[in-house]
Image 1 (cartoon, rainbow, N blue to C red):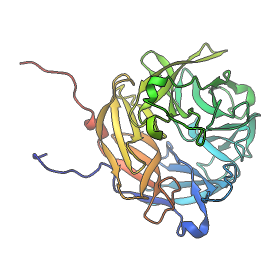
Image 2 (cartoon, rainbow, N blue to C red; image 1 turned 90 degrees about the vertical axis):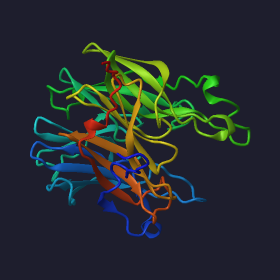
Image 3 (spheres, one colour; image 1 turned 120 degrees about the horizontal axis):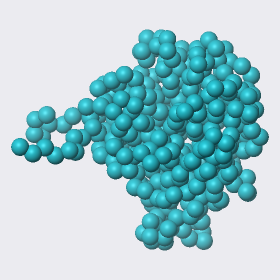
Image 4 (cartoon, rainbow, N blue to C red; image 1 turned 135 degrees about the vertical axis):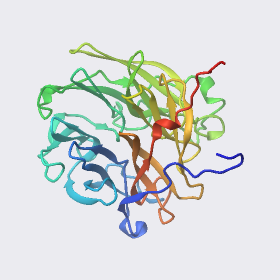
Amino acid sequence: MAEGEVTSPLAQEFVVINRTEDPEKENHRTDGPTLVRLPSGRLVVSYVLFHLHRRGQTHDPMKILDTRVKVSDDDGATWREVAVLPHELGLLFAHQGRLHLLGVEAGRGGLVITVSDDEGATWTPPRLLRQGRFWNTSTAMVIRNNTLSWCIGVASVQDRFNNEGSRTAALAADLTRNLTDPDAWRISDYLTYPGTPPLLRGGPHETPEEPYHDHWLEGNVVDAPDGLQVFWRARIRGGGGQMVPAIAPVCDLEDDGTTLRYRFRQFVALPGAWCKFHILRDDVTGRYWLTSNLGHRGVLALHSSSDARTWFPAGYLVVWPENPRSANYVTPLIDGDDLLIASRTSSPKAVSRHDNDMITFHRVRGFRSLALDIHPRYE
């Protein structure tokens, strides 16, 4: 690149998977999409529709419409709807020729799973795996030693999410068994947010008129160099009422095949940890890749790391500075030499950067070449 030359973001172009033609009239938004590639080559996306919260109305986060499943048989060029499911999504994954959707009952209820044997066209009735009040969006999981490891948010003792006393848990599934069998699944003890060290805030963060409770949510399970770890998004209000932008709580997850030992470890620096992020490990190179929003939901960035601790910028994926445009709550998928991305996206017609009107599909070609070469060479 010549000096002074300006390059375009890496994934600015997109294909629309879902569009709300009139956000004000249709009155709904989506959660973050989840994305998989099946052995046949088919791409599958699922996402949940929520009723849109209007300013001045009573907020009911439990009021959903349904979960939609769409597929593409032409490498993401076009998409068609194949199924509508009656629960909230969490994690879409393929195993032993079956497509699984691990989610929760409508209203952030019990943990459920449903399965498709025909690449998403039809699904089994949801099977309850564990009663309770759970929630997560599409975040990273790990499969190793015939075990699937993931994490989930748990309602507080006061039966609230994303507030004081917010709790989390780790999950493990035995992939040698039928995953619709509740006995194939284990869950850890619940872990309450450990509290934010005052020095991380940088000043007073609340007033009696505007109380705020730091909390964690939307964790990623990562096969890190020193074992399984869970990196959580942190909503930490700092001095002046601003969100602390780049601090993530990390938990260790140890699994002896019988018991899950899940415990808080430390806070670490992580670009964009104020909003939902996603961490992938590339099995080809062993490097880690991070998608996250920097500054606001209209700036989506890509970072890479050799140890899931020290992150180096790889480039901007999408840059939309004008409000309300955004690309957030994305799910990346390593697909050969490319990085595929499904995004919760706001167009200029959207109600806000948060309350989106589209699901979009993006591609970064040759993404591995974007990793910075940090090893010095001497003549």
